[in-house]
Each structure stands twice: as structure tokens, then as C-alpha cells.
Length: 291
Image 1 (cartoon, one colour):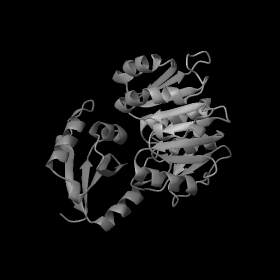
Image 2 (cartoon, rainbow, N blue to C red):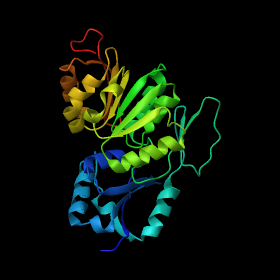
Image 3 (cartoon, one colour):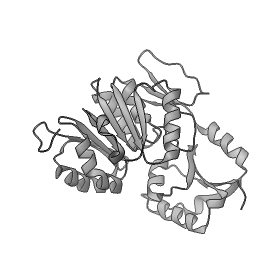
Image 4 (cartoon, one colour):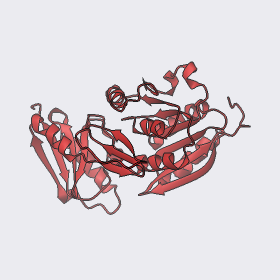
């Protein structure tokens, strides 16, 4: 095989983030939606019939899916892929936030907050319901002055949003080194290096001195990762802190609530959208083992 790209086009309106979560394939190198079409990209050398079969299975798992006949596979030269990817990215507004690539200038209102995200391999803009709900929650409930840990930070969009809304500082934790490099570039591009620290690894790798007085833990992950990190998520939060868990399907909500409740976290609110749920937990001041 060559060094081109495989463009898989699905002619349907669907949630790209939900499809990627159901597919759970780390070799997907890009995804974007344009006028009722969803495009997924793989390096030519990594594409095979097994990945096509897995994609069809993920599509079949979506509600009301009958999309097998609406899927096409095209080989795209490497030099054209980046151009097509860049053309697809347009400014996105979520409440006060305007999320845009650097080449798409926008007129900001007096209360608008800008986040610049240029397309990279580890790209995330807030289109998915789980990220969008967290961005909306931060705008509604962030008080200002918080110290935040963002677990699975990805593009660091949530960490940057929190700081722009008045949080004192944020630590973004990410296990993928490619995403870590991209997140660091985004933080620098947005002028937030003095307030946001990106750490490669897991919560276990977070130095003890950085665990002091964490007021808010953001965990936009998935069911299995939340369950495996549950004890760490509970322990890193200070007494009185909040833990926001997202990336959870509605049918997985009760399991997550039950697990975190056994660790002393109280479920205080929740919100769902498009089949996904964000759950807010509180670590009570009187909780046993609280810092």
C-alpha cells in the first residue's frame, strides 16, 4: 500500500463523536461532517476489510441505522487530505464561546470568548454532545477562581474554556502523546501557558504537589475508563469539590452513579442530550477520607 488516505463517506446526518465512540478505533486519523455527509479517514496502510466490517457494525448500532448502502470508500492522495480537512472546519458557537480555526476570523461580541483550534491529528472542537454539554455547564455554573483537573483532555478545549471563564488554573491529563503535543500547541496558541499545564499520563502520574485543592474534576471519557479510574477521580477531588462525568450513554448512567456513590461522591444533578448524559457529583465536606 502507498502513503495516501482512505476516505470513508457516509451519506447521512449522524453524530460523528457518537460514531467514533462506538467504533473505538485508535487508527482513525480524522473525522468531519459536511452537508449531510460524514467523512472518516484512515492511513492507507492501516485500512482493511476488518475495519470496514467494524465500521458497518458501529453504524448498525446507531438508532434507526440502515446506512450500509450509503457508505463509500475512496483513496485520497496525502497532499489533498489536509486541504480538504482544513476547508471543512468552520467557526462553532456554544453559548459565549466561539470556537474557530485561526484562518476563519469572526466578529466577537462584548461577552464572547474565543478559542482557536486548528485541525490536527488529535482534533476536537465541541461538536459532540458530551463536550457541548460540559461547555454549557461551565458557562452556567463556574464560579471563578477554581483549580481544575481535566482528565482525558484531548485538545484541552475544556481546560481552556474553564480558564477563560475565570478558573484560576487547569491541569489537562492525557494518555495519548500525540494529543498531548497538540494540546500543548493549542494552549500556547490561545495564550494560556501560564494557567494550563498538560501532563502526559494518567491521574496516577499526577505529582502530589499538583493534587492540592482541586475544586473541579472534569472527566469526559467513556464508561469503561470512568469505571477503571473511579477511585482516582474520587481521591483527586478535594472536600467540597465537584466531579463532572461525561461520555456516558443513558443506559450506562445508573452503573456510573452506583460506582462513584460507593466512593463517597454524591450525585447532585444530571443532564442528557442526544442519548448522552453529563452527571455532576459532589465530594461532601464530611466525606470519609476527604482531604
